[in-house]
Image 1 (cartoon, rainbow, N blue to C red):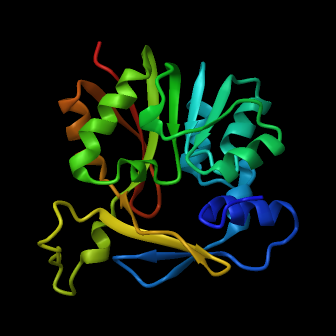
Image 2 (cartoon, rainbow, N blue to C red):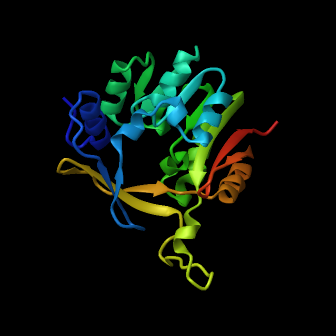
Image 3 (cartoon, rainbow, N blue to C red):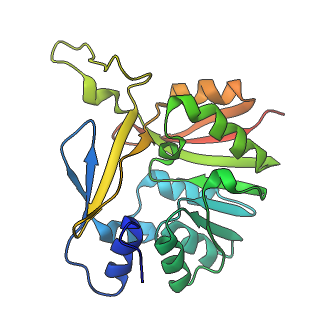
Length: 237
């Protein structure tokens, strides 16, 4: 039985067991409510955005898929013979990933995990887990600590600056926020709603600046069609 507070876990569990009747609703501090289609969380490789396909093709060695959700990325890598572990804070997501055939899973917050890997994979706006600009360095230092010397962090992000553009070409910004990409979110499903949590949309140049500050090299791998990008972070040689 999946907890009512585990929104993602409950939603993907229902979908997998043919009880799909509605999608997850995303409540955001910067936009009106939006729907997240649950079938999208079960997408095949061919249905994934090019950024995700590229990241999976670049993955090598012992891999940690951070925020694995239903396990679609991890399962593709496992089917290719990769040594991959799916990690998620959603117990339901971890349970379902195992049920779908993922051999290695972890129910944990990334900051509580200390095993080292060759590849750290953070997809579906992977910068979101950093929460806020104030916590960015803490997260980067931790990721660096669990990255093998010659390893890589593959992460995608989105620059949402376009959402604040005025008609005259200028930009509106909330003076109460340190950075425009800091968003408060909640999700709801079948009458159950999460508490609000912080989510970070990070532009590439801010990511690169903080990577350098934490002695990581940052490389822009690919840009998407809607202000999104894939980056690779490695240890400074």
